[in-house]
Length: 208
Image (cartoon, rainbow, N blue to C red; front, side, top):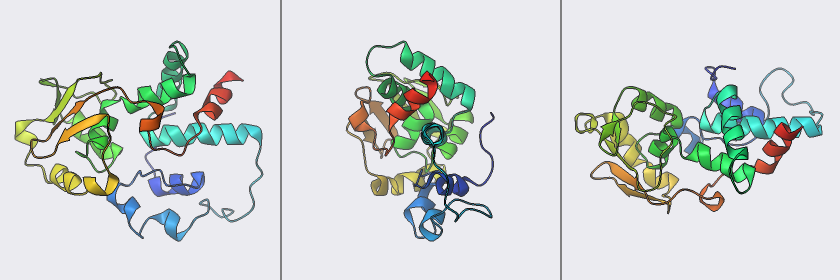
């Protein structure tokens, strides 16, 4: 399945929770889920039958949409997580959290992960002094991510940094907003990921 290219606000309404896919708009009263907190479509306000499969599927889809990855990418991350020591669900979230597009977003250099992917793909960021234009690049502890000198004048990055306080910082990241760079102090653990998701449901989905 290819990456979703339609109206992202419908995704939040379908999942019944804010996934923060629209950047700054998600923090205002213009957020669609604040105005219409029911699934989109003609039958959106009808009672939906729930099943164990649907609950597992929706949790998997929710996380997939949060990080903006395709179905095949998500399955690949799951297989990697399953081969690692520890809880598979937590390992899965850690892998997704370590994606460069997510790190750039978490550091406040982009207003959404979609914008982060766009900026990275156009070569506006460096990792450890080297230009990196792969959004799925997995960062490691002590990696330094910075905006290229020629890109520090971009209004989108400046505006994103101005709104960073609204989203809050993360203890596992050290960000120098003035110098437009940041360091991954340690790899993220489950407590470092402020998401209302139940990763065990995803593991159960793939275990069937």
